[in-house]
Image 1 (cartoon, rainbow, N blue to C red):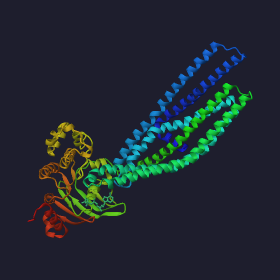
Image 2: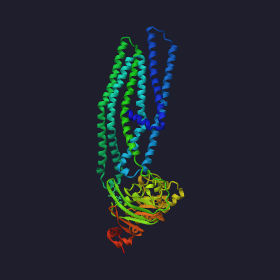
Image 3: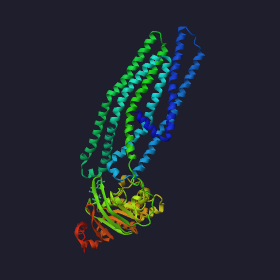
Length: 582
Ligand SMILES: Nc1ncnc2c1ncn2[C@@H]1O[C@H](COP(=O)(O)OP(=O)(O)OP(=O)(O)O)[C@@H](O)[C@H]1O
C-alpha cells in the first residue's frame, strides 16, 4: 500500500509540491478537528464545576471560548478547502496528460503491438482503469496519508490528557495495521485478476457492438450474445470470489478497531467512575477514539483501491515501454520515389508470411499486386508504410532505407486508401481535411469534386458540416470510399497505396470511384492490391504473389504469355466480371 502511495507521489511529477502542501493543510486540519472537541470538554468541565459550586462560571469567559470554537470550525472549513484545492485536481490533470501521452505512443508503435494487446485491454487501460487513478488516486492518498497524520495528531492530543487511553488507541491502530497488511497482500494478488476480467468484458462488448450488423444479417443474436454473457458472468464470478477473499482480513481489521474502541470506553469509564477522570474529559476521549478509528477504517477501504491503482500503473507502464517503431528515425525529405524491396522477409510472430521478396517499382508507375487470398498482398503494403518492420532485408524509397526515416516523414509521402474505409464520427469536411490539416475550405471542396463526392455531399442535410455516424454508417459503401479517396487526394502524397474493393458496387458508383481514383493517382507512384481486370491490365507492372513469394512479374501481356498462376487467376476474374480475354 505504501509502495503504491510512493509510486503515485512520484507519478505526480511537478505537482508533487501541491500534494505535499495538501499534507501540511491536513495536519492543521487535524489539529483544528481536535481543538473544538478539547474546547467543548473544557467548557463542559467549567459548567459542571459551576453546578457543583466549586468554581464560579464567568459568562464572558464562556462566550470567548465559544467565539474561539466558532473560529476553529471556520478554520477547519478553510483548511479543508485549501487541502482539496491543492490536492484533488492533481489526479485529473495528470491522467489527462498521461492519456494524451499514451495516445501519442499508440500512434508510434508497430501494429504488432495491437495484435498482442487486444482492443479491450488498451481501451480499459485508458478509460476505466485510468478513471480509478483519476477519481480515487488523490482521495486514497488523502485517506491514508492524511488519515495517519490525523490519527497520530489525535493520539498525541490524547497522550497530553491520558497516556493509558493514548496507548490503547495506539495498540488498536497497530493491531489493525497487521490485518491491513494481510488485506493489502490479498488486494495485490487480486487486482490484476479483476482487471483481466474487466479487459475481457470490455473486449467482448466492443466485439458485440462491432458485430451487430452481421449478427442481424445472420439472425444469430443468441450466438453472439453468448460471448458477452460469458464475459459478464466470468467478471461477476471473479469479483464475488475476490470480495469473499477479502472478508476474513477485513473482519479481523474491523474487529481489532472495535476491540480497541471497547477498551477505550471501558478504561475511560473506569477512570471516570474512580474519579480519576472528569466526565467531560471521558466524553472527549471517546470522541477522539471514534475519530481515530474512523480514519483507520477508511484506510482499510483505501488499501483495496490502491492495489487496483497499482495494477493499473503496471499496465500503463507496460504500454509506455512499448518500443516506437521509428525510435531511430530521422525527419528526411525525399527527392525521388523509386521503391525497392531487397530480399524482404517478414513473420507475424512465428508465422513466416513474406519470404525473401525482391522487386522494384520505378517512380510514377503503376504496380498491381495480385494473388490468392492470404498470399501476403496486404502485408507487402503494410511493410512499405512501416506498420511493421521487416525481419530480414530492406525496403527503400528514393534510395533511403525506410528504417532511417521517422514514421511522420515516411507517411508524409504515402496516401493509403483501404478497402474497409474508416470515417471518424465527425463532419464530412473534417473527415476530408484529415488528409491535410493545413488545407483551406477551397482545397477541401476541390478534392471532394475530384473524388466525385461534392454532388452527394451537397445533398446531405448540413452539406459539408454533416456529422457522419459511427464509422460512416449514414453513408453508402461507395460514398464512404469516395470520401476516403478525397482525403487521399487532399494529402497529395507521391506514393499511393490502394486496396481495391472486392465487393461489387453498382455500375454508377463503380464509374465514380474509378474517376476518383484516376484523379488520385495522376503523376504518382501507385501500388494497388488489384481485383478489377481493368486495373490489372492497365498496370505498368504486375506482381503475382503466392505464399509470400513473387512467382511472376511483368506486364499483363508478358504474364498471359507465360501462363501459370496468373493466367488461371485472370480467367477466374474474367468469369467473375463476365469478360473474355482476347
Ligand atoms: N496481424 C496478423 N497476425 C498474424 N497473422 C496475420 C496477420 N495479418 C495477416 N496475417 C496472416 O498473414 C498471411 C498474409 O495475410 P495478408 O493479409 O497479407 O494476405 P492478403 O494476400 O492480403 O489476403 P487477402 O487477399 O485475403 O486480403 C495470412 O496467412 C494471414 O492469416
